[in-house]
Amino acid sequence: MLITKSQKWCTVIDPQGQAKNWLKRKCGKNCEYIDYKNKDYPMLIERACIKGKTALLEDIGESIDPTLINIISKNYIQVGKKKKVMVGDREIDWNSKF
Image (cartoon, rainbow, N blue to C red; front, side, top):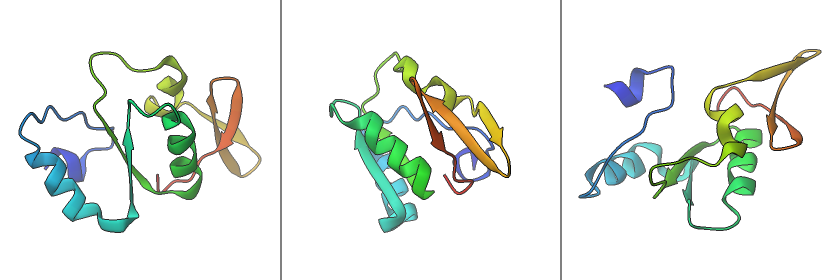
């Protein structure tokens, strides 16, 4: 219920992988599965944000990379009719389906 109806991002503690399996069934191919240990994960999240795909960031641990704070807190920048978000020192387009 919290995952499907929440307006905020959800954090799931899932030691048995049951929530992960449910999310994979629910999202299907429209989901970007991103491992936090992958060195290219910020670029993959940016791409999901621009394309409006659901992103499942796995194995985060106890702290989140500061470059993702603006995405997580939805700190948009309105530029004309477009919304943008700062990721690190770059400004990227925000897709409302993300």
